[in-house]
Image (tube, rainbow, N blue to C red; front, top):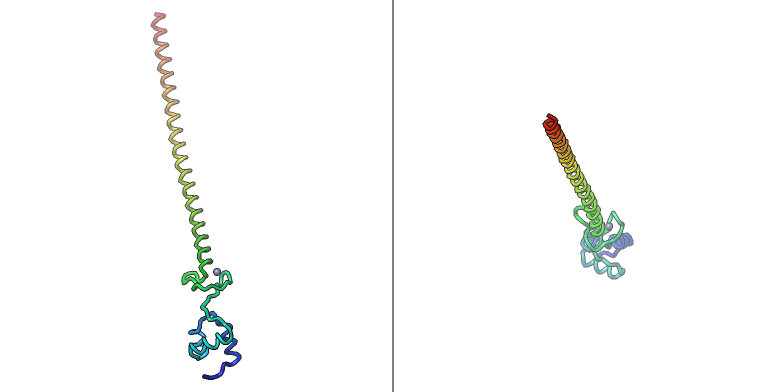
Length: 138
Ligand SMILES: [Zn+2]
């Protein structure tokens, strides 16, 4: 097994988070060789990922859909949910407004009908009163 060169060690340190398999493939070495040398250098090969959104390193694979860490993905879906919630609240308010308008329209018609009925009653009563008066005077 050839000795480790400085640039290989630099690559190992830089890409430690990619895991032993990836590093071994990149350097043309075996996985055990990479593991042994990493432990000799005190470098952890624990797999980790860099989130492009928040810039943090995470030990959980990035989301296949968002390409972000779990927290960023949850934040994003919370934002989307909040937006949907706002939209639904707007729709509920709009529906209530439409119902209120329809009720007001109906109430206006009821009120007008009552007004017209009273007017008609007054007119008929007035006519009857006049008719009675005429009867008395005759
Ligand atoms: Zn993130």
